[in-house]
Every structure is written in C-alpha cells, then in structure tokens.
Amino acid sequence: MNYQEICEASRKVVLQAGAFIRAQAGKVEQQSVEEKSVNQLVSYVDRQAEIILVEGLGKLMPNATFLTEEQTVENKQSDLQWIIDPLDGTTNFLYNIPVFAVSVALQEAGKTVVGIVYEINRDECFYAWQGGGAWLNDRAIRVSETQELAQALVATGFSVDSFGRLSPHLKAVNHFIQNTRGVRRLGSAATDLAYVACGRFDLFFEYNLNPWDVAAGVLLVEEAGGVVTDFSGGDNHLYGKEMLAASGVVHSLAFPVIQKAFYPTMPSM
Image (cartoon, rainbow, N blue to C red; front, side):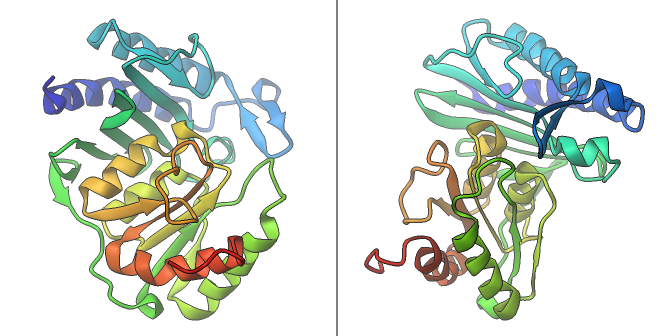
C-alpha cells in the first residue's frame, strides 16, 4: 500500500469538506444547533461535512470501515479504518472563533499510517504518512528545538463532560503557568497537535479525548520527530483518554509534572 498516494488523494477530500465548512461559517442559526451536553454542541455542518468525508474516502478505499464522531455511517472495526472528526472545534465554529479543523486518519491493522489536519481559517493543511515525515502545505515541518521547560509554550484543553480529573489537571496547569512561557487553550485538540508538530507549541496535554480528536494529530507529531504518551508514560494515548505530546526533550521535562499531578503515588520513571 502506497501511503503517500493515499495521503495525497484523501487530502483532496478533506479540503472539499473544509470548503463546505468555510462556506457555512457565520450562517448557522441558533435553532439549528443541538446540545450533546451543556458544553458540547453539534449542527448540520458537522454532519454534512462528515457525509462528504465518508463518501469521498469510501470511494478511495471501498474496503475500509469508519470510526466517526457524528456516526453518519455505522462504526465498524477492520484492518483498514478511517477515523474522522469532521469539525474539531464546533463551539469555536458556532461562536465565530477562528480555530477549528477537519481531522482524518487512516489506520492499518491498528496502526495509524496516514493523518491529515486541515485548519480551515488559515487554510493550513497538515499531513503525514508513515515513514514520510510531516508536512504543512508542501513544506516539511519538525517539532520545536526548545531545550528548557521555562522556554516552552504549552497547550491544553478542558473536558466538556468529565470533570472528575479537573483538580489534577488544574494542578498541572498551575505549574505550567508559573514555569513556562504560558498556557494556551485553543479549543481544538487536532489543531493543538498540529501546532506541536510544526513547533508553534512545545507541549500539549489533555484528558478525556476521543480517538477522532487526536488520531491524525498523533501521527503528525511522531512523524515530525516528537513523542506522544499517556500520563503514565505508556502508549495508551489513543483510546486511554489522556495524552502528552511534545519534542523528546520537552516531554522528558514535562512528564514528571504530569505524573505528579495525575498519578502522585506512581513511582517516577
């Protein structure tokens, strides 16, 4: 399987979905917005963008199954599976805050082999395929070369419906606020990871994430030379609902902070 060719073909589908989302920006009426929960919104834009992606990607790889946020198609597991978030940052989109993206990943035998994050407002398409490095609009990208936590810019996000771990999360945020260049919360995990991959952010961490939020972004970070783990230093970051992504150096410096906040009784690695 030629992952580069698949990436190039699927980028066209992602851009098509992004063009639809861009055309709908500022046009969604309040009565068209639904609440999944008090902090989680959805509209016809999410669903229609997902339909565009499912139809287009389905034509590229008819044997592949899908795992999608809006479930416009039956979610099934198989050796080939697309993982899709049609609009990561829906609340930003509905409130006209310019950070939202399309996120698409392809997994083969449980391993992500293609990842695309298209941040619509800046027309920036981040993409990677296994062994091919990471790219932004045809330019190769790498994670930052920051060597000290004090010089790092940190990104995080907050769970929309699971607050049982909010206290340790805020403990980590408190440390980073006082010991780094600052903490940012954009409201789109896919974009956060893309920004780590290209060196804009030095570090990203968040809990209660879903696979469609991060599958593409994880591959971007790894192909850009970065490290992604869960909060215990393991590799259960895609389905384990916790993630720490950074360059190798920054990851090693930030990990003790995360581990102490979330798993204070766990022996240090």
